[in-house]
Length: 167
Image (cartoon, rainbow, N blue to C red; front, top):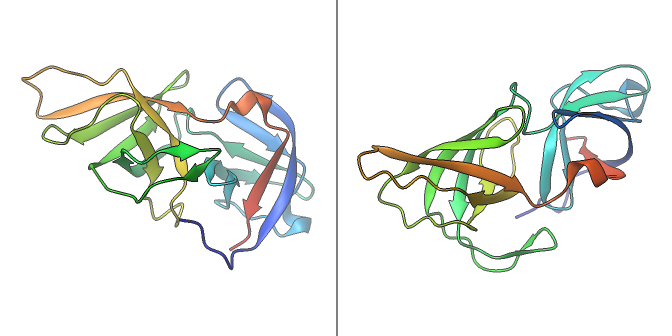
């Protein structure tokens, strides 16, 4: 799923603000720009929102400013690498709510279940990165679409190093 010719810049996490943002130690002088994608392996961490000369602030998917198009797949993910062929079960949208990531507009006819994998499919990100897995899937038969919660596969507060895409 990853682009092999992409250029990345290694960055150290130097601080966080609850669950909505991370501060990293690279900025304009390193070539970082607003809206650069930040990842950890094939895991989506967030987008750079504020850049100064020597540091940047990125918003995590928990942030109320985050909204991304995604798709859901039953593919297994081990250590951030998709381990099966990718079958799209449904397209959807994730939104940060502050304390969790909400996913909505899931097709009511799709065979989605808790544990299925959520992958970015948004022009702002420009590549396929794993966001997390589905939990607490709604089951109301009167709904025209379904919703759920997305649990990231990486614990943001434990991150020490992330990678900024310079493309």
